[in-house]
Image 1: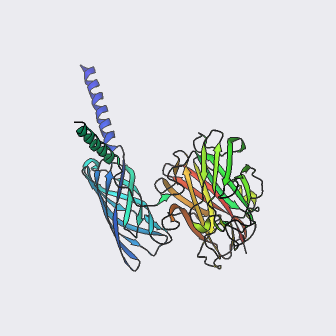
Image 2: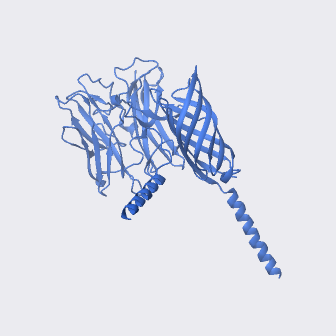
Image 3: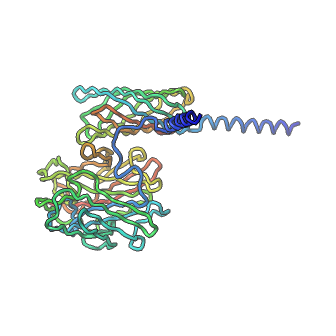
Length: 157
Length: 307
């Protein structure tokens, strides 16, 4: 009888440990979106408003929205900050663009290569309670407003 | 019944295709030379017999093509030596091919770019951009190709008014300092910047050169391949990209679009304004990449600074 109790306890401990491990195991997240961004410039302060559609892992097909500000006095890589939301049937991610993120423009200031990072402030649904930093890369065509953005990174509980 | 089946099949096929289509693919500009590398990575430059880089030559001039190639598919990602190559040559519009031979000490060559061949431009050769290609095939039957970045003044141009090089190229010993990483293969060159802070502008901006006057602006341009994945180095897979002038702090290399509208490509580039009091002679620019997966690679590129 005692042996049975020990065995049961051991099995239970393993089950709890693996459940905890699964919950804390980082989830690789990737998402790609494309859409349109509008910018308004006052002197060298630029306000950004972006909306796009695409797909994210676990989040599913959905959209990204973002608002932010940029400092166009810095060239060729214009730094920008802001907040955004990725949403889909699988959940929502609220993120904040981290310092160091920028868009590097070509000679004409038309095509910008976006590179930086975003902190996940809050996630719901299939990514509930997950946090982490996502790498953001993409391109923005200031002439047409078209942009693309990719998020990659690991989210942990 | 057959028509219904055909229609059903077509709808199904459309559904499959629609599902397979990417969610939303972006505008725009592709990485140079391509998103993925071929089986052989090739980098090449055009220089004078002294190793002075130039993209502008007059009819009658001798142009030395120098190159190196890396086997992307081989486990060791080895740099191709003489025994590894079946052919390595330059193809030039309306001209016989120029064969490249493995000769690191030949005029214009160096340890980094040991494959060389010389083309003497015919007196009657048409002025303008020369869209040459360099083709290589290894004994393992792998092939590679090099073309120049599509920025007109930095490409090989023939002109009766071609600006002369400012002097001899850097010393060969200095140029041989860098050793390529087995993980990353890089192309590096420099062009004259159009906004020098302490020297007159050159007659033509963005021409390839490795000889500068004090006060001029150096623009470092680079692209490369992660050899383990055969993918271009882009912001998608690069953690840091920097250049460092000897004795100074590293400076980030931005990744951006370059070239004419409709023909833009993405590569890494940054400008450095040479201080008016900077030491004369050869100086090494250390170009370094670190990928998100932790791979590192560098290229020590030498320029010469003259008064």
